[in-house]
Length: 454
Image 1: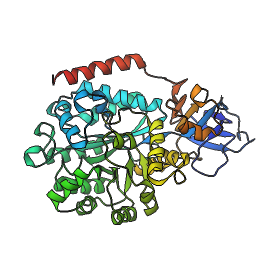
Image 2: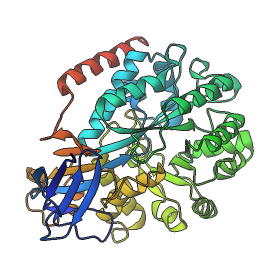
Image 3: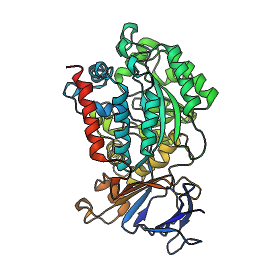
Image 4: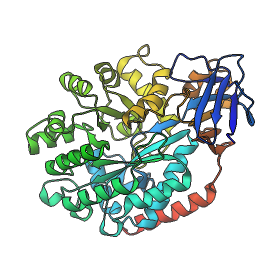
């Protein structure tokens, strides 16, 4: 028998469409999909097994995080790395990250996903690019951790092959041979990548950045991704230092380099995308290359401001990411949407950017970056991924527009979160995890990692 739940008469709903959804949503919990979107006053076409009164909740499509580094939850607010721009920040942390082991990575992944889930996030992409000798099976470990949380993930097989001895930025202790990287990339695609509608685990290929991988690895990764129809991801145009590196080493700017290695396409999404000129923005838009805006990290490292509206106008899809938890330093996606709204207003003006833009970026826009046509919108047939927020805290008192209040008044924790028709957060708490036990275990692993460098 098919079970159905009616999310009844929400306080407000953001569908990303013009549909009237005041009557709520009907979810097929067995198949994990939306079966009805009800207009005001409408009732389900057939009786439901369960009715959830959403009259005190703002209902959003599940938020989607398109750039993160889960392992960095272990090095938050580290004194040695504070108050530095990107390159010195990385050079401080690389030797510490070289000490990552399997237990540390599992704990970091589990905690990062749980933290995201509590903020209303239902799908997340992680960019793991640190593979010291003791951590060759990193993505396998992350897949296990993700399965334990119930969230959807796109885990990228990141890589670094250009060490300091060869003119790159990272130390040799965290770089790998290119044959090893490509062989493992293929293994992971064959073992884990599920392209089906409703998939909960996918794989993408993600050489780290122009200053940490060779052109050959970028090109070969693009060929492999095309052959197996997986997506490509990397950092690009985050800082002026990176631009100067590309000009010096490759003799070209970042977008020219991207095209040179076969990455300027709709198969690619880029983290940051700050330092583009107008011609480059038009080329990215024409290619359909996606951009993940990471406002908190960009402010923390003083990297600059992504030209989001120019990119969208040119045709480049834009989504959001919290970035690594050593440069944010949190994994909270609803607060990241608020940051994005305010930072883009600073660039374009108060009238040019609204809360609806930010909510679109963090749902439909992010789904587009990951190539997910089944996520990001509350429509019939879409996956039943929902984030429900209450507005009964002191911070919301006196507010009048529920959707605007969600960002303007600073929502930071969802009351309920559903993934594939199953509740994973209820009453603001994880359903399947002991949060205190999770925190204690993670803190122990963080102390182990940092103590190795003292």
